Structures are given as structure tokens and as C-alpha cells.
Length: 88
Image (tube, rainbow, N blue to C red; front, side):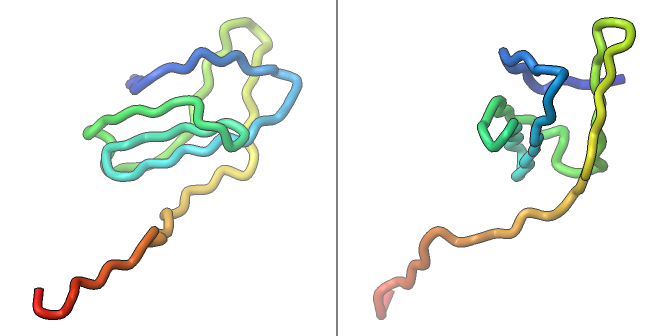
């Protein structure tokens, strides 16, 4: 069974390729399509586990193709460094 965490109001063009990226940080999920955020959600039930892709084809003959599927850890880059004043 599938569990949904959100839906977006976008229509995909089946004649072109898209760059899809999913970022999971803690309980926050962000979906980017061609580097634009199209969906954000929060769900604590997906803090660990596997990854996979699934597509729904509403008409006979529809198909989804995926290329270059990768799972990798995100690298943490601090935005700013803070050092407390001496004596604190």
C-alpha cells in the first residue's frame, strides 16, 4: 500500500524530462521539480527507511521512466559560526 503525505497542483508534460529531487531532513519533506519547490510536508513516520519511486498512469499506455536514481546523505553546511564572548 502507498501512503501519501501531500499533493501538488502541477501537471506534468509527458513529452519532456524533469529533474526531481526529494529532500528529507528530520520530519520535513521537500519536493523540487526542475529546482523549484513544488511541495513541502511534515511527517514523523518517515524518519528512516528505504527509498523508491512509484508512478500512477491514469490511462492505458502511459508510462513513467526514471533515470539516474540516487540516494545520498545531505551534507551539513553551517550558515554562520558563533563564539560566545569570553567569560560566558
